[in-house]
Image 1 (cartoon, rainbow, N blue to C red):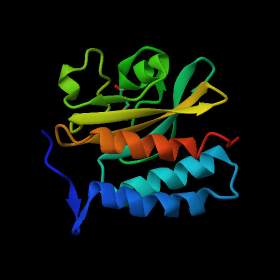
Image 2 (image 1 turned 90 degrees about the horizontal axis):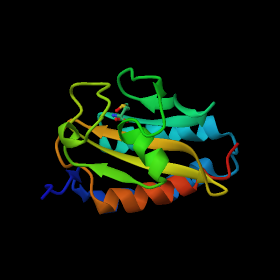
Image 3 (image 1 turned 90 degrees about the vertical axis):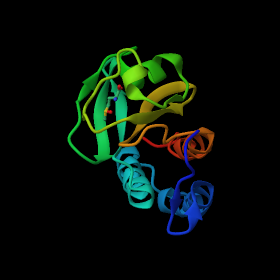
Image 4 (image 1 turned 180 degrees about the vertical axis):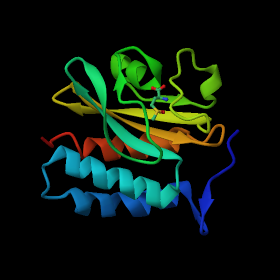
Length: 159
Ligand code: SME
C-alpha cells in the first residue's frame, strides 16, 4: 500500500482539488495544444515535484516527445512499446507501481521507479499521452488516475 503523499500539510486529493480550477483558468481561452501541454507539465511538476512530467504526441504513426519538465527523455516511442506505447494502444490509463515489473518498460532514467500514463483524446482518437515518473515505488493510485484523466480532458479541444 502506498503511503499517502502529503505536501506542506495537504493530501494528494486536496492538492489536486486546489490545482484543478487553477488549471481550468490557465487553459481557458487557449487552444494551442503545445502551449497548454507546456503549462500543464509545469503545474504538475511544481505542485507534486514528480521526477518527470511530460507529454508524447502521436505524430506520423508513433509517439514523439512533447513539452515536459525533468531530465532529458527518449524522443520516439512505437505503438505498443513501453508504458506509453501500451497506454496508446490500449487507449486507457496504465499505473505501474514498479517499472522493473512492467515487461518492455522503456527506462529513460534509471531513477524512475513507478509511473502513470494517461491518454489524451480528441474525437475518440488518442492524440497524445501524459507520462509521469516517480523516483519512488507505488507513487500513483486511483486518485492520480481520476484527476489526471480529468485534467487531460481539458486538452482535448486543443489544436
Ligand atoms: N518509461 C516510458 C518512456 C518515457 S520516459 O519514462 C520519460 C515508457 O516505458 O513508455
